[in-house]
Length: 297
Image (cartoon, rainbow, N blue to C red; front, side, top):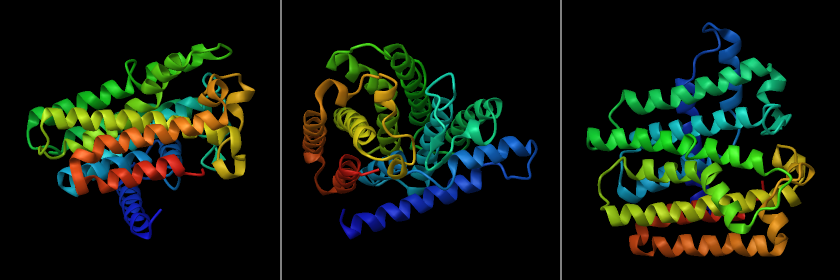
């Protein structure tokens, strides 16, 4: 990573952290235990990849940064809710997230369930309370897009597919279908919501940007699978090797380490090619993509 990108990313990560801190319920608000769990699950951890993509897409179209901050926060809240629920005993049953005990371990299962519920609803509250697009119709479509990306036709549906796939052998297209929904849908939403904070792109350009985001979403998952297979628990901040232990189909289990790495690089190349038509304004999207593919934790 260049120092320029590191500085840019750090600035946006700090910006989103401060905004989230200001919008989450205070610790002394009733019910205190739930609000403590909410703040515990969101603040002080994570790479904020989805907000970075939203900010980069916003810069592509020259969107107001305050608008983009709100949509970036909404997407991050959906992501945080999904992590809390995914870690529950009825899902992936994990005990470590971002280097600390998962929400249900630190608190309890009922509180973790309510934490996820609360984060999801707060995301839509943020999207609905202020003007975030140049037209009301666009803003309504943005709300609908995040809902689709989060629900049974997106992230939740992908998780259901994932749970049903444990112990099974999937084809590569089946695995791709699962992760287009489980991981990719929210990444695509982050990019498209950031871009829709301004109305400078035509439908063909929006379609190109969506294709870029699809490639990035799949690349993110391929790298995630590689890290689960190769990195340590201390490095990841979550339990390493859990996919293999649980007999879950992954890009590594289907392709092997080397071919999975080649696939991630190919997806990055495809994503970069899509951005060629946007010229220099796409530099941050390229840099975030490079960060995603080359990350080590």
